[in-house]
Amino acid sequence: ECIGKGKAAKPYEFGCKVTVATTNARSPGGQFVVHIDALHGNPYDGHTLKAAVEGAEAWTGVTAKRIYVDKGYAGHGLDRFKVWKSGNKAPTEAIRRELRRRSAIEPVIGHMKNDGLLDRNYLKGKDGDRINAILAGAGHNFRLLLKWLRLLFVLILEIMTAATGGHHPGVEADPGRHEERQRGARPVADRCPRHVDRPLACGSKRSRGPLR
Image 1 (cartoon, one colour):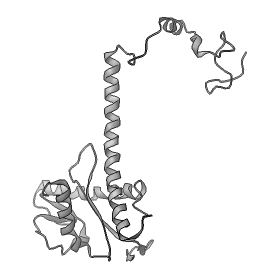
Image 2: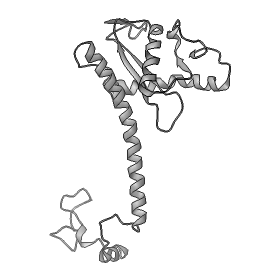
Image 3: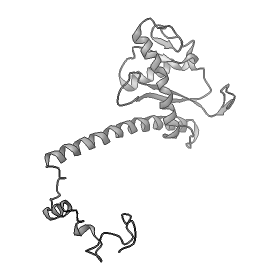
Image 4: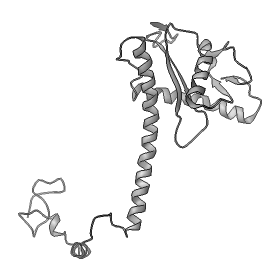
C-alpha cells in the first residue's frame, strides 16, 4: 500500500498503518503498550479510534476515562468530552497536564520501529502484518519488564551480600589473601604461574609492559 505522508523529505511510504495505544500517566516503569494493530486499506485515522479504544479496554479490562489523540483524529464520532485532541483548550489543569503527555507516545513508536522491528515486516500477508505489530508491542513491554527485573536482581544481590558480611554466598574468605593485600603485595593466585614472585604479565590484559 502507498501512503502519502505529505512530508518534503518522505512524501510517500509503502506499507500499512499501525494503531498504537499506550498508558498516559507518568510512571517510573515507562509507558506500556495496551493495544496495537495493523490496519489495511489506508483508513482515515478518526475512523479507527473506536476500534482501538475497544481493543485496549478488552486487552486490559480497564475502561479509559480520557483519551488523548493528535489532530489527525478529527471526526472520530466518540464523546468529545472523553476524547481530547492536541491543540484543544482543556478545562482543568489535570487534563492540560495529561494532554501535554500525549506526545510521549512518539518515542515509544520510535523504539518499536528501531528495537522491535516494527519499521520493516518480514512476515507474509496481512496476517503477517498483524502478527508483526503485536510482537513488536509485546517485545516493548517485555523490555520494560526485563529492565525492572535487572534492578530487582541487583537489589536482591546487595541484600544477600550485606547479610553475609560483605561476601557472596558460597564463597569463603581467605585470610592469607586479605593479609597480602593489606601489605600491598599481589596474592599468589593473581600472579603468573611461571613467575610466582613477579606481577602478572605473560600477555594478560592487566600487564602494562615487559617483565623486569
